[in-house]
Amino acid sequence: MAFRDLCAVPGAAASWALPQDFTCVFNWEFAPERNRLLGLYERGKTMQWNANDRIDWAQDLDLENPLQLPVGALPINAAPCYQRLPAREQMEIRRQHQAWSTSQFLHGEQGALICASKIVQQVPDMDAKFYAATQVMDEARHVEVYKKLLEKFGVTYPMTPPLRSLLEQVLRDSRWDMTYLGMQIVIEGLALAAFARIRDEAQNPLAAAVNAYVMEDEARHVAFGRLSLRDYYPQLTRAERDEREEFLVEACELMRDRFDAMELWQHLGLPVEECVEHLHVSGASAAFRTRLFTRIVPAVKDIGLWGERVQRGFERLGVLEFASVDIEALQENDLAAARDFDARQRYVRAVAAAAE
Ligand SMILES: [Fe+2]
Ligand SMILES: [Fe+2]
Image (cartoon, rainbow, N blue to C red):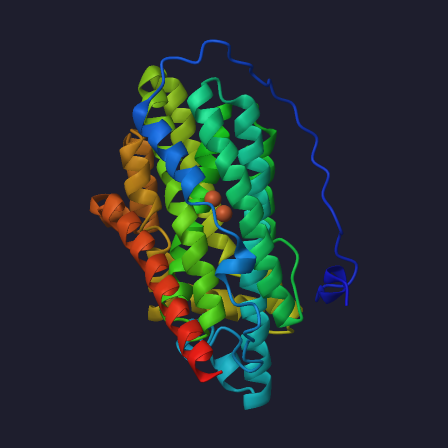
């Protein structure tokens, strides 16, 4: 069946054409180059991988609980409207929710692919263009792996409206740093927290490995955003920084709302208001919503957008405490986790070869 035919929403668009209006910059100077950025470019080149070799695509998903996540991972698991349903229907809702969230990963990755290629054109410095070019390849690979994973669900969902609205804003903005801010800091920062949950909690080895390997690349992408913006933001005026801070807080709110999955509950015939209210009050879901910001908050502090607006906004979201998270340590952990998956895979292959 064609990928398009897997879409759960009849009549969903097959493409999205977004007009662009920005200046692309050639650079003949090639200097001054920033060593840390060039170091990242070196790593971007040497750490390329082929999804067909590194991942065993013969593995399948469990149809009852494709990612094999704990039951509590479904955000409405404890909601009365869900608890009342017969077991079969509960199972189906769980499957649909996992397909919906994996679809959002896929759409976010295509957004990242487009944004990274926009950065190549827009950003004034050559070292940043070099690095962004490696990210374009990374993001293409991420689209490839989530598409393959999603095919195994047998069902897909269109892009959620909040993600679409943020992508549109970021892509229509003609200033290069806004693409970084929206994509490398907000969308990727939140995605990393969501991927980490699958990597660490999913018992399905295929889904866990896909997320671990994508995270290995994403750790570089967030570092790229931080290194580029950290140099740039001190050069802006207070008013220009305020504008970025305002955008940042709005983008964070928008992206948190995307996890409310309103359109999904509606599509599944569940009472939307009750579901969303449950997400806000139930302990487990509220904790997950907060945890989504573990990576964004320290990155924002690091790039120097740490004025009153941002701090007040994060306080409202209840996530200010993450300012002290050691982001470099998290990134080291992402790299180590991917190596662990490689080791496990080598072991499985060795055992299989010995048995033959
Ligand atoms: Fe990505
Ligand atoms: Fe990325």
